[in-house]
Length: 231
Image (cartoon, rainbow, N blue to C red; front, side, top):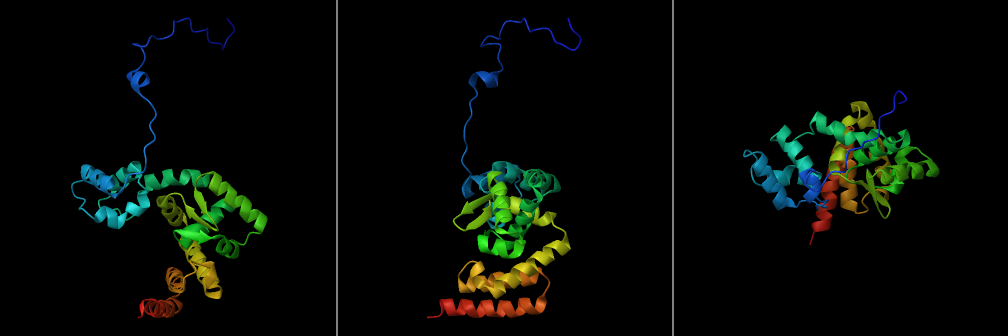
């Protein structure tokens, strides 16, 4: 026979009894995201040190009902204060496969928070409309971002946190400063509600280490909140 070629497999096909058990009785099942109660039970099963309520207060929103992420986080740290390096690397695989413009957009989106508007991305990213649309299309088609009308958000909150942690300190500070400046110049780029927009600006000034601006913004946010709830 020619070198490098394998002879044809002349064995008869496996009978039903000879097939592995999982091939005989297994089937694909689509599992919905776990709710708070099931995640709490999972937390107790993994670690008896997790107190009731801590899961909801700390990481329920970030888990998006994913039991694998819950197990990884809880096994790594009972406090669940930061993503373990191994889990962070796994979360970043899909992000790192994206083109550079898409990765740049994800950094802005991660610094912006849970949701970011298209106009705010346009203002901060420095890309023209065509480049921005292509970069967003890549991020959405790769299931990293999801679109809701004019807003974008990460499909999984933990991916957003992983992207934020992957940034250099100076890079993170610069992005928060640019977001604060953009929202200060045009509050409509943010949430749209006066109190929330001012609070967003205060948060970004704080993360940018611009303490005078952060203090004045927090005072303004407090006044806006009083106006909203005043009778």
